[in-house]
Image 1 (cartoon, rainbow, N blue to C red):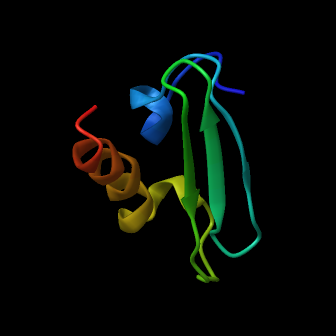
Image 2: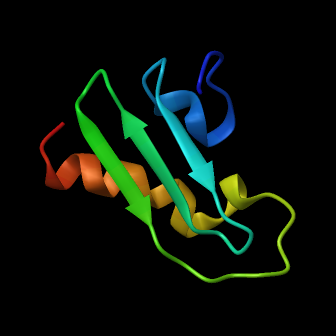
Length: 68
């Protein structure tokens, strides 16, 4: 659960929660905006999934498509 937004989470709503997988797959549920995000990827050999360029671009792209 995001209580103190940092890094890529800085643009997320407080209270958003999610799960990250071993190879980059991630999901988030945002109760404030009533939105669920699911990123299905397979990428290994990285230390921090939040620093992947596709991860950084994912939520802003979804929000733009939803006009949020």
